[in-house]
Image (tube, rainbow, N blue to C red; front, top):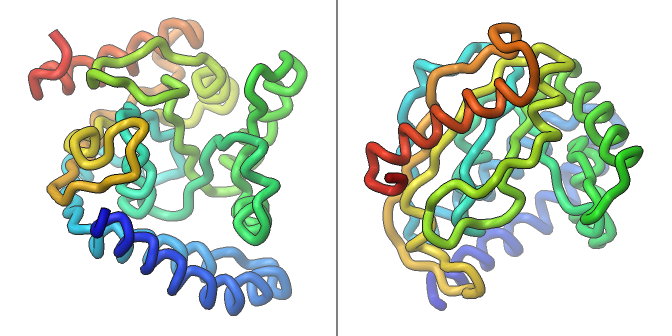
Length: 236
């Protein structure tokens, strides 16, 4: 538990003072960039304090424009490892109830995170996608964990389709991402963190205009990720 305590100490010890300074600044100037940079720096420092080293591969595959990152999901460490590794500013789909957390919820709203209700209606889902499209057009990346929950064995679970509808609607490039190493660092149902190396690998871009619909697009992205995971011996 010592590694987890160090991570939380950094996040809380630096995050609260940073929020006290950066949130009013961001609100008054209508500029979230400073707050985002500080936030990602603190996330990165917390991960490092826990003994987690992050190695990024495939940066040459990044398209140099706002895009949709589609990642596998095996651990609660995935987002803290992935988000600081991305270029520019990024927004993510999150559970709507998290928006109700004091201070953190306000920060996520300022960061234009996209709330999603569990068991949401078709109308709510459409509103989430429309808001995500607005965020994307505003110059931010969108980060998706399309499985919706963590995989216990590292193999990809079925994908939810909302993010692929977003890509088809906006034409934004999709960058498949595979993360490995995090499953052993923090297992599902445990708060214990085991130090080690996490690898974030960006795969070749998948362009929506090359496919007739979101189903074909989703299968193409999934195939890229499965191929990469197979090379690591995770998917047969």
